[in-house]
Length: 111
Length: 113
Image 1 (cartoon, each protein chain N blue to C red):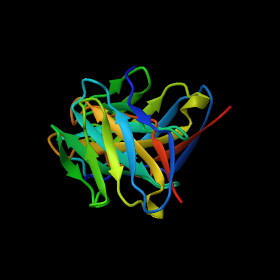
Image 2: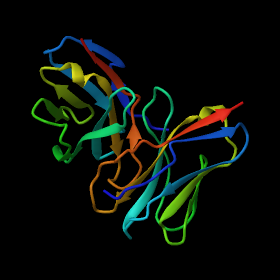
Image 3: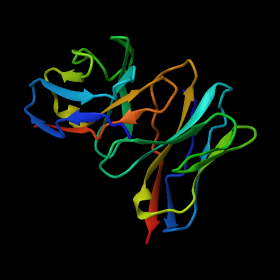
Image 4: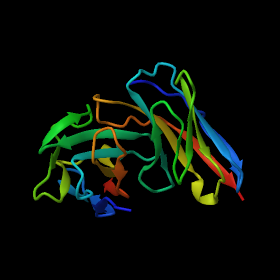
């Protein structure tokens, strides 16, 4: 499974933007970049995914570097409810079905 | 938004007993998964299930574990002869396609005493 690297933790203030980085230098052409998050005492929750182009949805934006070796999950206005562990995961089209969770980035949002 | 439902939310069992964890995936989904998370550790893949058979399993998923889709709506994980180290949160997930988003349930907390 292609590997991703994320900071262990990040801190933000409420209503400010948050940029969560992920490095995936060994990404292959058929790897999709997925982001999930896990709120305290809950199951993982899908956030967003992309292949090459930047993506936006109601939860977040995903900015993918031109060489695809890194990506950034952007929360435009952090709320207290966004405090969670954020996981950056690569999924290969036609490859393994499983999600491989690393340790992720624990995001703390200060009021 | 559609939901994956898991029951029970918490199960306490004696070591050596069998437990069945139940899940109702989203109705039009074709791929089903079980994951577990030991307290304070990473979420770990156990097994995936497609077309009424196991499509992939991890080293954790040994003969102690089995999965079944008995009636077209439920998806169950059976753990035979539970051990203390089986204590964990167990998450069921489903997806329409193997590369699309997976929807996770809220989990069953299994405590083996």
